[in-house]
Image (tube, rainbow, N blue to C red; front, side):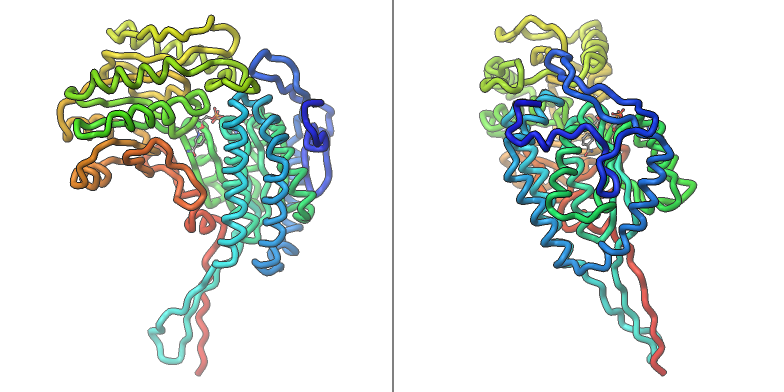
Length: 484
Ligand code: NAP
């Protein structure tokens, strides 16, 4: 990895209990660059026995970490935050190499990832208990909040840094230890974060990163009796299974799952703003984000104007290697993702959708595909109901507010939704009726560390970031003292 100015960030081992560890049976996983499938390196395929051992060590380490004051933990977390910011160029490069997103986006994600550490370094100091008015005159009632215990997490490839810090930062701030299994496509960013955690002085056993076969390692991470809390970000399909695996030992569970975000353009919208925001909300990370728009509903009266402005902007997007300066859309993570999109595309075209010719198309090969706009889309097509997770925009006409609300809510998902309107009465009416955990109103960018991120319906359980994010890593203990 000679492109990094600090080669120490390129780690090809797991980080467990303060040690860099290889697999006891010497099996490894090869990691490739999605641009050309060239080999970047390998990571260990850890055994289940080694994972169990890591859990026991994380449990033992927690006693010392949780005994520190929140302010002492905060100082260490701040050092981690500062080191991540200081190494942003290398971390961004590493992420682009393994994940494919354009370098500027990768660096943006590093900043976003670091912001959770800064935020929870502060929030950890504000974990308050309460006093409760007694029901018996000689009783004194109160609550304290304590770290929930050892935490485990499984994270996806589309945000290789932020999906880790969004879980690890509140866990550590609360006084817990955590074991993380990143996606097998993007382990190097996670391991670089572990290197910086070590440099920051996070004690051995508190922040651990393991790599290996997801199904095999997923079992101890969801079933080991010493794990108190499991947090998952990924597909709804895998989330359901892992939720089930957590049930026998009744683990507290957070699930950040798939979405099917609608983007509604009402006839009173600022169409220039809607078109510009639509491009951001659809094509960020090549359409591979859980909050990416899946369906554009555009009012009949402004449909032509929106389509013209949106199409002009999409035609300016450049597809290419994320390390090249003018790239807007990098490669898709894997060929299987493109094959899945093709199935949805074929179904839509067979049922009457039309694909527009944009004029900026490159020859599609390997993991590269062009941004696409489909018009004449209707609700009979699978593409309206399934997560596309790629750069395909689907445009659907609508006539009135009640109709579009019913269509937008007609999904098992409820993560993000967006709408554009300049009528303040409509803004509140529609925001209250949309069945989504997060609503962007006159904006396509909603994610930050200070606001609660999370879905409703089958998009998940729990909130990450914000003042709510630390609660999942705490348990409330009630104290009843009799003073008679
Ligand atoms: P995925 O296939 O569900 O994989 C996510 C993680 O789960 C990976 O680490 C994967 O490991 C692991 N995994 C897969 N099967 C497993 C099993 N049987 N047991 C234990 N672990 C298992 O999802 P993805 O394709 O990486 O990510 C895309 C999905 O994530 C989309 O649906 C997207 O909407 C969702 N997402 C949601 C949010 C949110 O905050 N709501 C944010 C980002 C992404 P391997 O990589 O080793 O297979």
